[in-house]
Length: 193
Image (cartoon, rainbow, N blue to C red; front, side):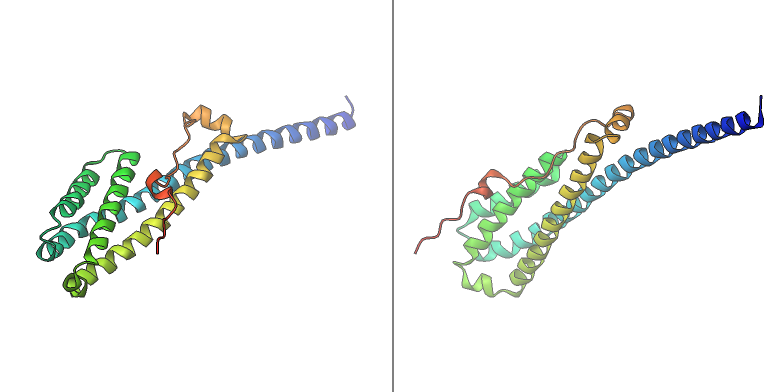
C-alpha cells in the first residue's frame, strides 16, 4: 500500500466520523427540543391555571359583596357559586377551561346585573374586586395566547422531520390540544338601538 492510499483512507475515516458526530448531534438536539417544547407547553398551562385559581379565589368576596345589594338576583349569585365549584373540581385541561369559561360567563352576568344597582356600582369593595377580576382576565387571555403558541411549537416539532421520527421513538406522537373560544362567545354581538 502506498502513502497516498493511507491518506485517502484517513480522509474517508475522518468524514465517516464527522458524519456520525453530526447524526448524534442532530439526535440529541431534536430530542432536547421536543422535551423543552413539551415542558414549555406544560408551563404555559400552569400559568393559565394560576390565573384561573386567582379568579376563583376572588369569587367568594365578590359574591358576599353582591349579596347585600342584589337580594332579588339569587339565581345569578348561585350560578357564579356553582361555576366556581365546578372549576375547582375540574380535572383535565379541557374540563378546567370549560369550567373557567362558565365562571367567566357567570361573572359577566353579575357585572351586567350590577348596572341595575347604583349603590353596588358605587361600592369601593365592588369596584376593587371588578378591577382585580378585569386584570386577571387580561392575564388569562395573555396566558392562553402563550399556551397556544407553545402548543403550536410543540406540535410542529413532533410533526415535522426529523422530530417526527424521534417523537415516535420517545412515545410523544400525540399532539396537544389548543385552547379554543367557546361556541357561545363566537356568535356575533347584536347591537340594537
